[in-house]
Image 1 (cartoon, rainbow, N blue to C red):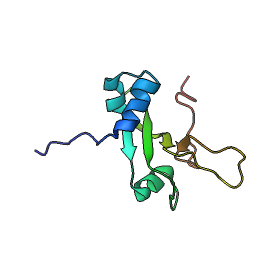
Image 2: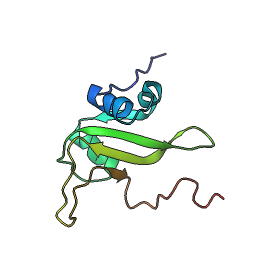
Image 3: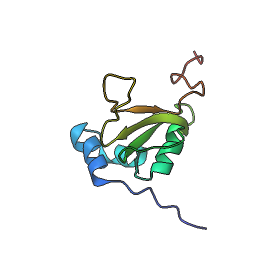
Image 4: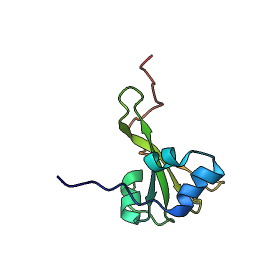
Length: 108
């Protein structure tokens, strides 16, 4: 049986969570994913291409099963400027356009 290694985490990403947001290191290590490959980031965001900086992603968790869900947020190291938006975007929710909703929506 092959042992699966946890993803490599960028030190700056971990520090942003543990020092900047005061999230415990154990929680950050379980939930955070550092991403640097533009193709992998584009796939995560459901985009054809990605030309921004590396960053981190975190996925939502199904509260009933504890399993990771398909959607979450990606934060590039440098905020992205879109021509149709006045403010640069620090966080990008993924995936777009597939009908994902708020956690628990329709389940009450």
